[in-house]
Length: 114
Image (cartoon, rainbow, N blue to C red; front, side, top):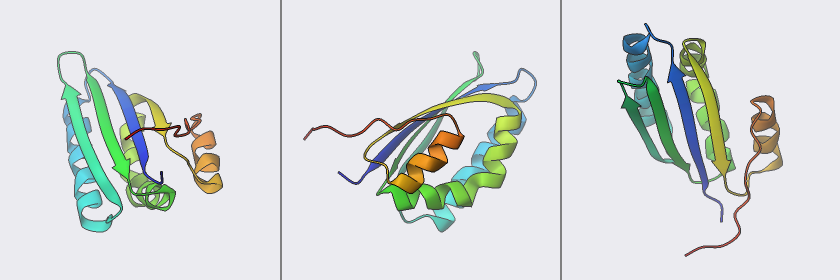
């Protein structure tokens, strides 16, 4: 399986919800405009608890690396106003595995499914 699935989580700093939402809109716009390998990129924000979850699917590791390059500037801004954690699922290439290691994330390899 080549697809890579990501669950990204952000705990938004208390007074930064509006800034965070604006940044998320910029990320979505960039992905729509520039990324053909992004198959799913959905943002969910629980405003009461200041929690954001992003569910993402990419066609392969190359598409994930392209995504990181595309949204890096906006994502960095979001990470400055939140606490980030993430999980990556799929058979990541060595290049993607290395990039994820820099973020403290180890991919979970695909085993089987339908």
